[in-house]
Length: 354
Image 1 (cartoon, rainbow, N blue to C red):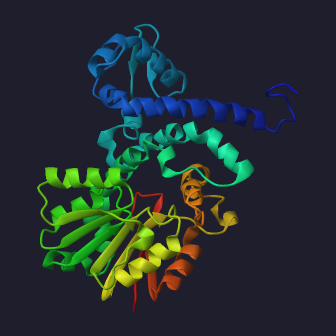
Image 2 (cartoon, rainbow, N blue to C red):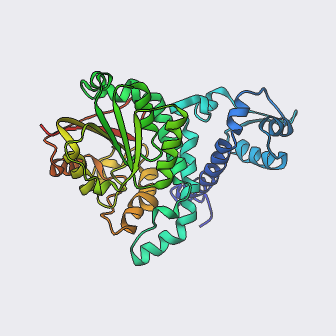
Image 3 (cartoon, rainbow, N blue to C red):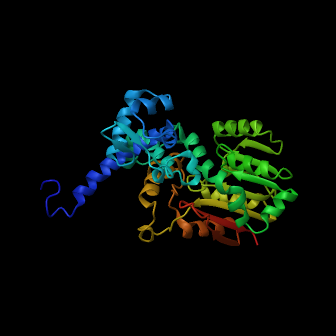
């Protein structure tokens, strides 16, 4: 049967489209990383040489990239003048100026995951997983991705979802972020609430070093960071407020992490768990706007790094039903949920002991 022949049901065309879109995703990632979208958004229609000069890049590579962007209908091309332009309605989803709407960041996950494909194939055959060390750019990508969301929403939108917490933070309380990565959330909160005391925990020495460097550059005296496994927090009634941001689902032992967080809270403490929004039932995720993306990231990273440590392999799509069950088993008596408008990937679990 030839491509496009009647009887294929259009699936052949879908596969061709998929291959084109996958390659285009790599080019969009490059456009984001080289700031070509940001540069083009500020230029009138321009030649490849003019665009390359404005971006400080090699013209031959920029010209070929523009070929992909033009045939991919992302950039407009005038064959008569040989110029290229990025329409404003597309720039609104591709540039750093777009803030939370910058979807180009998502395409970087293709490049992050592709290098471990051979190892993942081996895991399919033999079990096990790929450790965090197999993803050398993971911390930097997560810092950029989550940082954009936190910059836009953490202080003014996300924290107010927790009843009374903003007032308590202004008065001065003890706060921890477990699985803090590069520490941006802690540093944002420490800057906004100077009377409170903030501690970030993460197993990554590189993440902790980056967090400390950012805190130093921001002149923060109320933020500290410690390299510690989330499953072995070892604190008792030490904090009034604990947060975690997309950190539970890829832990080796998320059950121990959640139990440790519950123990670390004081009796009137609150836990804010921001994690992937999904159902624990596959059939209920058929219309999830990021379903294929999140299941793939889970298979090739989140689940795999957990299994590499002999862990539970919970995965990104653990879902609300499982989350509520695990929070209850950890000792939380009350759990409610909330969403941040514009954040299609996450849900907020607000949990207390009483």
